[in-house]
Length: 268
Image (cartoon, rainbow, N blue to C red):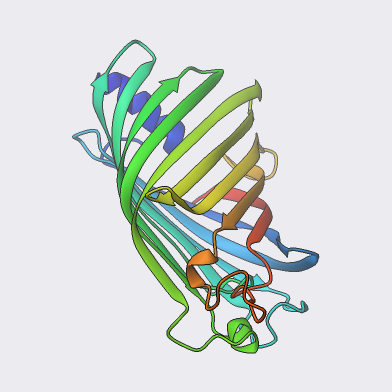
């Protein structure tokens, strides 16, 4: 069982070795798209993975984005924002040779995006049904925890909203389906769909896709990644008026943002 999990951890963490801290740096360019607005910029990230002797994979990631802030979305936007994720993952049951039931604890967040997400926090434990083979794999995730989304005040103030109406938190459940396919040696295609809800009411739907290419010719053990992440938010929780009211305006004139990235990851 431990050998199976160590193989999975190596796949997820880029050949993490028990007892060793695996550091990686990433640098790239991005386009943050909201409706017809494109905000271009550059970003850098630091990734840390540590596989304990007990077979628990610890992961930390912090992305810092610097935008070329030439958009019409938020005239007072400070053109630097952050995205982070922290997790601990371990094997619970080995159901078959390539099928495992894992547990995971996640803390993820965003700060100060140009799409007016002032702060987002997701903190939740989950169970993962994980099917792993060298050429392809798939994971189904179910979890429940804390969800918080705060909207920046600049755009809402122009639409009749006052400070104090911009945060929404909930005890929420989530589901996710994800997978990967090795197109060729050193070429990996992956993607996933994530859904958050408070009871029967949707909070957020997320989509992601990535193409990873091993690029030892650029730098030893480096990986070039082209990725897309899209978030679709349910902003009805912030409504100040009923939807049939003559003065009704949603808190934001958009509910979707999409982040495109091209970046190189290298060992540190």
